[in-house]
Image (cartoon, rainbow, N blue to C red; front, top):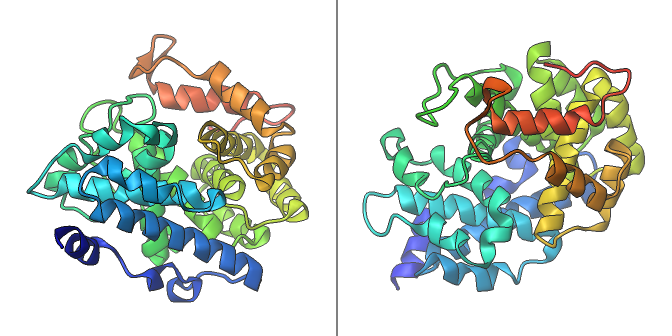
Length: 329
C-alpha cells in the first residue's frame, strides 16, 4: 500500500511527455511517436523506482522495458531515487544501493537522472539527493540532467531566451565555473527533442546561442541524436554539415552516447548509423576511443590546472575528430 501511494504521489503524469503539451516541433508522426515513447519510458522507470521498497528491487521491472528504450527507464529511475534520497524522511542511500547492483552498467544515465531530481527537490536537500554520486570524474553528468530538465520544461526561458543561472551552487567543491558548461550539455541534448529531431530546426536553435556556448550545446545534441534517434542517415548528415566548426563537439557527444549504449548492452541499429555519420566509426570503435582517453577519476589533472578531468576527457575525444577544423572552446 505504501509503495503504491508513493508511486501515485511522486510520479509525474504521462501527459507531460507529449510533444504537443510541451509545444515542441512535430516533424513526422513516426519521430513524434519515438520521442514520446522515450518520455513514457522515462516516466515508467521513474514509477518503478518510486514504488520499489528497496532500490535494487526496481531492476526486475526496468529490465522488462524494450532495450531501445531501457536506458531512458533507468534515467527515470535515477530521478526517482534522487528525489527519494532528497526527501526529509526514510533511507538516504537509494541511488548508492541501486548502483551497487546490476544497475551499475547504467551509471552514466542514472547520474543524468539524478540531475533531474535537483529540479524537483529544495536546494537545501541537494546534498542528500546527490548522496549516491560517488564517481568524481563523471559527476558532471548530474548537471547535464539538470540542464535537460530545465530546457525540456522551461523551454522559453532556457532555450529561446538563453537563460543561465548565476552562481550555480552544485557541486559545492571544485571548479564552479564548469557548472554552466555541464548544464549547457544537457540543454543541447534537450534541443534534439524541442526541435522534434528535425536537423535544420535543431541547428537553428543551437546557432541562435552565443558562439562560446555552441560547442557544449552541439555535443549534447549529438549525444541525443545518437542515443535517442529520430533522424535517418540523410538527416544526420544534414546535422553534421550544419555543425561546421563544432563537428568535433558533435562527434564527442555521439561517442559518449555510443559508450553509454554499448557498455549497458543496449546498442541498437541507429547507434551504428549515427556513429558512422558523426564519428566515422562503429559504436565499438567509438567506445574504445572513450575508454582509451578516459583519465583517472580525480578532480583535476596536473597538466590542466583548474580544469575538471571530465572536461579534459571530452577534449581528448573531440580532439580525435579535429582535422582542418579548430576545436571550439
